Length: 319
Image (cartoon, rainbow, N blue to C red; front, side, top):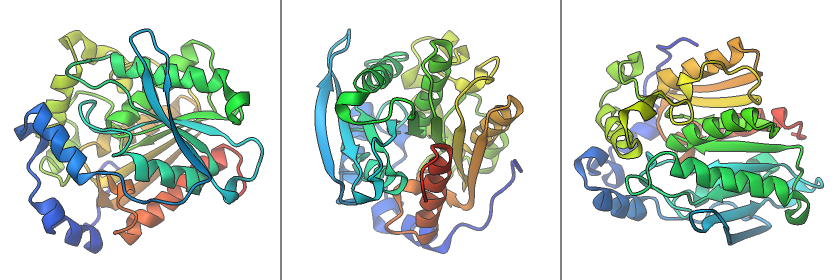
């Protein structure tokens, strides 16, 4: 990947970022955890999203308590039997995020890909630092595999997906699945946060990027990791993995105006070098979080289609 692949900011996105809804938002790192969560709930509350065949909540039994999940079953576009399933991990720096804040995005993935999406309400840091979120997501993945027939999904077409910090969780799930012989058909990593190294070129070029800054990323890592040594653990920072050989096929989505651009591109390059089939969907004119802006930014809507098509291709779904 050209690590400098940044184009002029999309005009519709630029206008949105200058609007009152976004322009007046304080930086995440300037807030307390409780203040940040309250703001995230206000700004990213669930909207309508595409109409699906069924959406239901349930709780999975885990060793440290129940793990809430929300299951999205696509509508008529997915009349194949049975459909694939994606375990989805929301973004929010492992500190923020709920099933509701990711609702619109999960509906879009289910509708456009034609897959059942199992969204995980994993435990949040700093109250529950690494590896709590990963353990909750793993419970959801194993449950989906074990209950595939009952919930009506194809056990041979399971995948993992996530945005931002959730992209790191999805990549970590793929690494753990490789080690535990749990076959996955795809991993979808959307502008993933994969390493604590804040000296990559995109951090220098976009330190004050819209929606996520270098200081925000540093603050999120501080909340997530209980001890410095965790930053070297590939299940916390997947770019630290010694080898990516044998990982499932990947779709990596990145944005030009994003501090995380360099690490996402580096991970896509490493996957390819390891012989993993990889589709890199890069949007030079967009910023972090663009897949949540499909209703307001035409280029983001087109980028969502590109991502969905890439995932569908790896899952061998009809267009």
